[in-house]
Length: 404
Image (cartoon, rainbow, N blue to C red; front, side):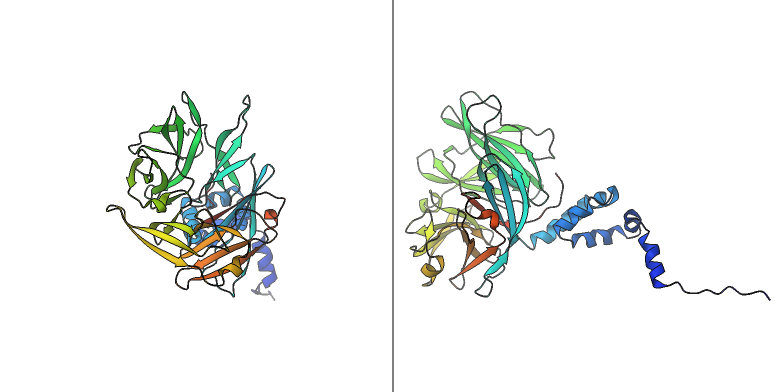
């Protein structure tokens, strides 16, 4: 008698073993690309870095513009605090989630060590724009005896960086006076604006970041004569604002339209733009913060601070308000010397020290409650004494996985 063949269901373990034989590329090819992008966008940054090393196909999927844009969009909804501190010839980056509506119940947050980059002497770090920062590094170049400013674009999330071309030397040109890292949200274009003093006047040059090759500086005209650009600046909706000395030897507010590369100025209250004032983005408007009685820093002895808001740039209209610090201010801040770092999306002022300490605190002032909250950041060992004298605290940092 002829035996019949029976269809016996396979054991689940057998199925799993068979599926495990599929290569990573085969698995990826069986999933719709839209779903692949959505899955990858939910992964943490470090996992994405590891996935890039799996195969060329995976790296290609993670390099797609629709994926990097989606990841950046999600990251924009969860901004971070970015900390940077230099130890000897290294610049160390750490980040932490930016607390939303911090209160007394939220006083401890963990910081994550991002990357370490080689630098000689960091003079300045720009604001973080879409995950990138521009670092001014003082270096003694080969064949030179005096230091020169070298500009480096850095992505602390991916660990990538590249040095910008040297700013062309002009006759009688001194060291670069100031550089600004700016962004045009319409064209989605990063640029660097540099100013240098030549024979008693300032010349202005712009570099547009398009990849890392064939980058060149271009001379541009400035229709607003000004001198000694201040260290405090802010870029809002494609317009750079900074204080400077005008031709009449008074402080003025200079505006630079990133897209058109045109200058203009706004009449400003002297107290709002003079040295010691900090320019911030307050509800999408330009604002200026000054502590009282010492405008250069705020400490336990400070009693209040004032804020000037540019209500109408075309009409040059400003409003002002003085905020009294709460009674507990002196006890919470104690002997710390703090500096304004900006305003969060939830409209809280962020203050932090410029120097490292055994325990690193960041302070949040709530406009509505007129209250102060101190938040301790754990995992900040690289910022402890002996690692470096200065700490840079940058607000609204986001993670961009786009490779340079």
